[in-house]
Length: 287
Image (tube, rainbow, N blue to C red):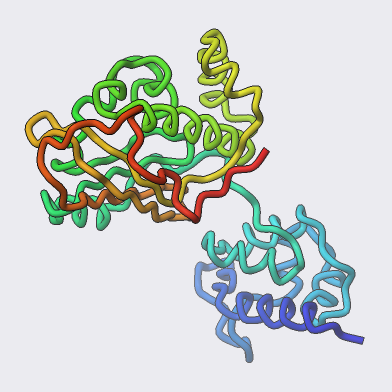
């Protein structure tokens, strides 16, 4: 008896097989005597290195749940896009495979967008390792030299614990918030990429610092979706800034938009460096 999930999986496999180009003959001409488009089941099974009997039952929704290895072989055989591969895994009741590292390239359209917004909205982009990979001109004006040299000069967490740049930008509450959230997001990044040499080296480099080690041992993990912070602008003084983060899951890039609230220029720093609630309601931190 077919189950709904197996039937959906079988329909998807049949539709993908129909789009495949049949093999060419010995003389290089394509087979023209086929009555249906695409590959035969036998041909697809051979490419995927599985038995044709098992593949036939998969298409008919009668096979046992395929393993992740079989699904990966089918995805390669069909030359699926990342979205199609993830869909295949979900149809089979499996979580899609996770990439070994975030993409190193920012979408060209996103780069054009953040440049065209110009001074209207400061924007930064960082990847799943917490490395800054792009920022527009107003963000540079607002933050100054948030990146530096060395192996981890673009990493937000490393800069937060090793550079004085943020002590010049943020009030006392903002610095505490930054260190807490950066550490929590670094732990989440390590969970996504547990074998990544870059992250493992970064953590090893930071653990020699007692302040990082103490926060790391708290085992907080989470994602920063929205927040409020006060930023010291070199000419305009203290600015009240709301931040919102948007995620590109395919490349694991985070786009942060900064909205400056209207307020009295050169407002004095509040007592104790506090200025109302900081972490937004969408924050997800837990121990």
